[in-house]
Image (tube, rainbow over all chains, first blue to last red):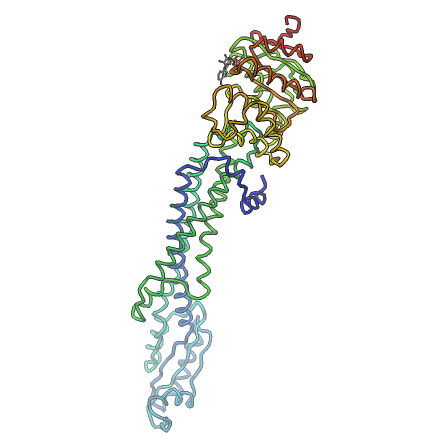
Length: 300
Length: 225
Ligand SMILES: Nc1ncnc2c1ncn2[C@@H]1O[C@H](COP(=O)(O)OP(=O)(O)OP(=O)(O)O)[C@@H](O)[C@H]1O
Ligand SMILES: [Mg+2]
């Protein structure tokens, strides 16, 4: 009855025990075919989930970038308005840090466009204030309204914020990929259970003889478990291979369709689909084992 | 080996067997006889826990049959050699593997057992048919194969249901000699049969007791034969 005994027996193999249950049977062939198809789908679900996750990570990294406020006030009013802006920012929830960008730094930012000798003091260059938000973020519409009311010369420039819904969408896609994977796994378990039950039912005379000559339930169950686990593994291995081949065969769209050609695995992620046949084998192992013991207990 | 105390069995509401109180002592040799349909096969099924008594108690190797779980039943059956009346085999395995099946399922297959198998096949005259598939066998061949399968594990108790029903007299005597020999080695033996000639032949060789089933009850019938 021990699970470990079953697992070791499975790996060791037992040609004698394999022979006591007839080899034929379409339920076994069905298992290979369905495990293959499910593994093929699982590779895509996994690729979708992983790619969406990668996208979400990259975009939320971009989100961590700061937004800025541009204050284009006449030099005379600049210090007072700057103080007002800083007070408003202080009072706005969701802002982690603020930093007034100094003259030298601003010169350095502008240097690529205007050259090193720019007399910054003579030009109406706006004052820049960098905002680093907290993970929750701040209410950008509220801030914009308040600035418009109190310091009309200050403009909130949050060029990175449009990505926020994209990140949410990518996260959702990652979740859906995972859900699809779970559904595929559940369907595989259900299918193997049905196939194992059919096989157990059609082999009732065999099981009867085995019981009469003193075979224990665990011995009989193992013969079925071994068969279905190995077939599910074989089928899933083939399905995974085909799935990976199909992923590699998606034409490269270059940067234009980056989101499309991004579907797939990068670097170490290629190890993940190799888990699909293993997962199929584990699923088949448990599904058959449970079905076998349940069926055997109902027989004399 | 087997004890019954006031045991009864019925497939429906009517009892096929009742008031069974008896003891199969270790090393004893019993015949079970009675008309067709009197419950001989049912009696044997009670002895190897294929059926459980609806009343009373059946004790197998000291344990109450009701209390045995499925693994314990399997273990008990590894100590009991049963020749079934309908001789079921695994039709996808050749005869020699079928006969060795009790060894296979209890993982006792070994080189000495392989020699036992050859000796046994020779004794029951099935050596030439060793690789035949069960559906190709005659009724008598199946019966001999069933007996061989029942004794290959060297069981403590042998239950044989009409083991000679389909074989000629000469072969019947040959099979009987095998069972008598096993009994001399200390095995407990119970043979269900109609064949009074076989019982007579046996009584010349061993001190066999005869149990007669009549209207669902056991009568000792030693005096009659
Ligand atoms: N599975 C069953 N369901 C219902 N009734 C059964 C079943 N098996 C046997 N019986 C009935 O029980 C009675 C005893 O049957 P059993 O097979 O034990 O007789 P038997 O003495 O072995 O007969 P035979 O000498 O013909 O083999 C018979 O009347 C039979 O019809
Ligand atoms: Mg009978």
